[in-house]
Image (cartoon, rainbow, N blue to C red; front, side, top):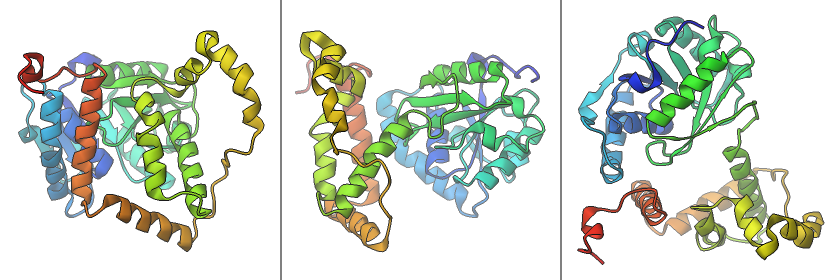
Length: 327
């Protein structure tokens, strides 16, 4: 792989290919971190939707803290993919999760982007080995898997494929860190990566409970937000379970609770997503939303994450709080 056009900390221009919820969220994040962002999406109404997404996210980004010079005005929407990446120092691809589409798009990006520029895919599950098969220059292709919304959730999982140059993985990880992300650099490919596999296990069990009439959507959400989710905001499941062992830690926990692993508590196979289950999930979410629009729920989510980040010391409190001016 040719040398990247600059060091990870010297990047000034980023290209975002795909401007939906994830790609638009990436664009908002990079803009807030002071980068110039050029975006491209084939949808005819993509430019308007992208600018509305950035505008909606900006109040939350202001609370998080903007980099010097950060502005939505530094966003450019290009007329073509080739124009979008022509002078990019890093490329973030966020196209729909369709393997053949990803393969062709990454091949086009590898052919059009400046020599050595690292290209990352936001794929939520495909291994890069499966996506880089058509690229003439696969060495610079990596996975940079975010969590929604990318402008708010710090995590990004980075991993290469069989043909990825390890230097590209290292470069991407250093770039994401410089861009304010919390990075897990994986040393091997794993379908679904780490966080999605854990999230998927919880999701499948939730679907089983709704399908079996064992719990409502509202019950399931409350069981996490009022229960383990409060701990997971600052301590993961492994350390949380270790504390269940008291002074004996994880060893005592496993010895004491290990036999329950044989109990039929979970069903990791997905239930059949038939029309009845689909309807139950849609209607259950409508009920749980209680009249709130998607935009209102997103704003609540953004504020909730900011509050948790502040409460756990990962985000400075507003100066009025520090001065004791608010209660």
